[in-house]
Image (cartoon, rainbow, N blue to C red):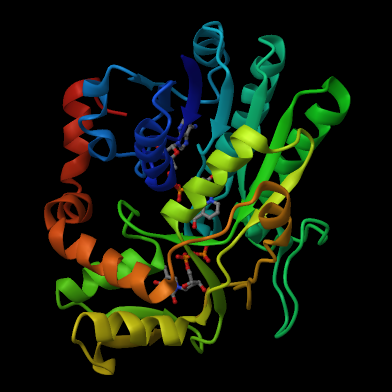
Length: 336
Ligand code: NAD
Ligand code: TYD
C-alpha cells in the first residue's frame, strides 16, 4: 500500500482528486488532511471511509506537530491542495492567504524534508504568471507576475518549493493549472455561483465589461494530470495544465444562461474587480509531450454535465448557501 497525504482534501479539487485516486489506484491509502475552513466540507468526502483505504485528519497545515505526526507514518507522497483560493476574498484581506498559502506550505516542506518524503506535489495556479494580452500563452518559463494577494501568496509558495528542491534536494514538483469547473465547487466561484443563482432565480453579477478571458478545464482532467505528475513527474520540474478552452466571461455567462433556459435580463453588470487579470491561457505542451497527458472533456459537454450536477445536487449547494453545512462538521468537531 502507498500512503498519500492529501492536504485540502475537503475542498473542491482535493475532494474530486481523492474520489478519483481511490477509484483508480487500488493500492493507495489516502490520508485526507483539512482544517475545514469555510471552503472545506466533509460532505464532499462522505462515504469514502467505507473502502478501508481512507482516513480523515482534521488539522491545519500551519500546525507543525500535526503535520509531523502524519508524516511519521512513512508517507510515499504529499499533494498540497490546502489554500485560501478565492481572489475576491484576498482583496478583502490577505492575512489568511499569507498564513495558509505561504507559511503552511513552508511547514509542509520542512516536515516533508525531515521525514524524507519521496514525492511532494505543490498544486499551484496559472494566476502566478499574471495577465496576458490578446495573444500568447503561459509556458513554464513565463515570468512570475502575480497581481492579486491570492496569486502573490501562491507564487511565494512556488518559490519556497523551488528553494527546498534546490537547497535541500526535496523531490518536489509544481503544477500550474488554469480555471477549474465541475462538481463540488464552492458557489463563490463564477460557474457554480451563476448556476446556483439562476436556479434560485437570482441575478448574476458580471464584473466590468465581461471581456476578461479564462481558460477552462474540467476538474477531472486536472485530477488525471495530477496523477500523471505524481507518478511520472521529474523532481524540480514545473508542469502547466490546461485544456485550451478560452472564453470571455460574457460568452461563458451566455452558455450558462442557455443551459438553464434563462435570458440576458438576469445579468447585473457590476463594478470591476481591482487589478482584474485580463486573460489567462495555458500552453500545456510540456505535460502532454513529456508525461503523455491530455484533456478528455470538451467544454460544452463538461459545462452541460456540471449544470446537471448542480441541478441534481440542490441539497449540497443549498446547505452551503444557507450556512447549514457548517453545522454538519461543527456537530462532529466543535466550532472552528
Ligand atoms: P477550495 O477553496 O475549494 O479548497 C481549499 C481547501 O483547503 C478547503 O477544504 C479548506 O478547508 C482547506 N484549507 C484551507 N486552509 C487550510 C489550512 N490552513 N490547513 C489545512 N487545510 C486548509 O480550493 P480549490 O479550488 O479546491 O483549490 C485547491 C488548490 O488548487 C489550491 O491550492 C488552489 O490554489 C489550486 N488551484 C485552484 C484552481 C481553481 O480553479 N479552483 C485552479 C488552479 C489551482
Ligand atoms: P473566479 O471564479 O473568481 O476565478 P479567478 O478569479 O480565479 O479566475 O472568476 C472567474 C472570472 O469570472 C474572473 O474573470 C472574474 C469573473 N467573475 C464575475 O464576473 N462575477 C463574479 O461574481 C465572479 C465570482 C467572478
